[in-house]
Image 1 (tube, rainbow, N blue to C red):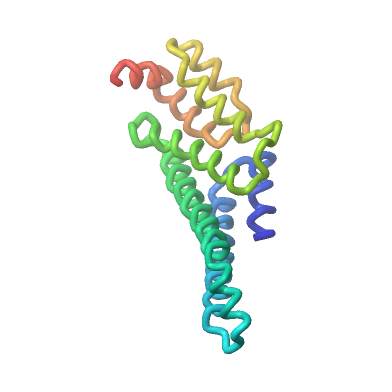
Image 2 (tube, rainbow, N blue to C red):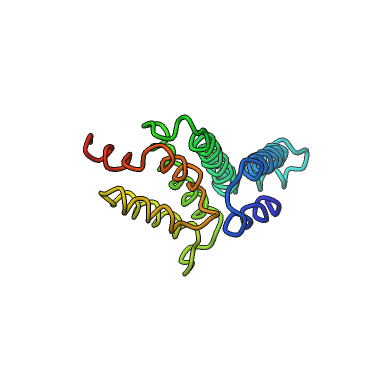
Length: 178
């Protein structure tokens, strides 16, 4: 889990990129598999005391496994959304718009699982706020200015840039269709 934590801490400084997401998936898979093997090993141990520990602390062990599975699921969602928003020809599709929201949601969910609650400043929360604020703009000029003001490591910047290249009115059109 230490490697997962170290990889996670790269995101606010380096941004989100495919290789980092893949490393998170890989390391979480290893951690969950190792933990599950440990847990099941306790349950079948020849030592009665270890079997008793596994039985007595079943809810705790199950909770740890569930936590790891939640992280894996959110990182997988993050990976899928990241792949869609980084596919240029899909920029103005409904799938890309939904994937952008999914990516931000997954980042926040992972942060809540990985970090202590009540953290005062959060780059990921700032990115989410920028994304939500941008959706509120109703005219092309405001959208363009909003996109240009976004940090260079914002995970949605490639998608925003592609929308600018194609049609910055996409946000307005989407809202009028809803």
